[in-house]
Image 1: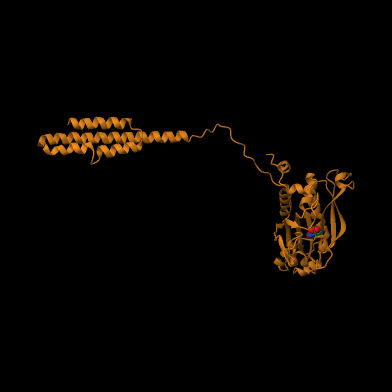
Image 2: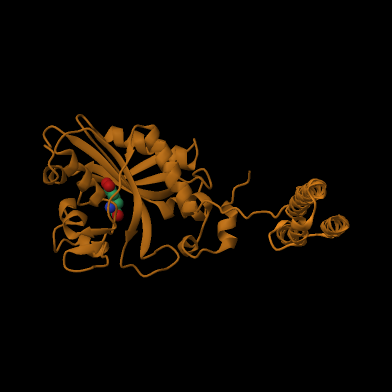
Length: 344
Ligand code: DAH
């Protein structure tokens, strides 16, 4: 009996000072396992009288229960302590000042593109796309610029091979859209996208730039529709007071063709360096779709007419924001880009 009580005292004091779940488990295995001191004490039962054995059995059961209970209580306490420690370590101080996350800005060319998309989608146009690597057929032939045509010289581009090239304008999307429509109107699309030319880079020229093509095909479309559309474009991009002026021009894919001037938004048409003191700024090319193009692209020119326009996105952005070097658009200079950062 003394031995049992000694074992109990020893076990309870060890359990009390135990500080880890692993040590606690070792104590459990030792005191309650087959090879421990309890089991050894039990073996002496075989030499006892029946009465002695009964009371010894009672006491040893009680000791076992007490040790088991003590281990269980300690286990709960240790687990709780461990959890508290973990919570303490993982506590986030939400009162600490946060880092300011840098926000990018929308690129000025994207801003112009999005404004144009909003304007034209609002008038019922859809936004079309075409490949930047284009065939000679779509880029030139279907736009009424056959091999050897002088217009090819003005818009010389980069060739992948004899038939594949980097598109020099977004106009081939006109042909792609018309052919897809299989001779049935109406068509109302714009196509913003990248374009390429074998130009020497300078302040106003870049070998890669962006355009936005526009195409409307329907019955009874006249030059008045084109003029009204472009007037709206001018006012939306450069302010309500803008007026437009059409000058005769030449593009192989339109007949008649016009060059479109917008009254200078910088001086209200009075004359300033931006408009070279003329009061007008040349902004884009446009015209009535050439019947030859309609025919090549599957439309009957006796039934359908259309107008088209091509807007240079860099040119519009440079005029609108007073940017004097086209290279700024492509140089990723944060001092430039940050000027277009969100203000909200
Ligand atoms: N494709 C012409 C260019 O790159 C721009 C253009 C002019 C497009 C007149 C048109 C248009 O659709 O009607 O210079």
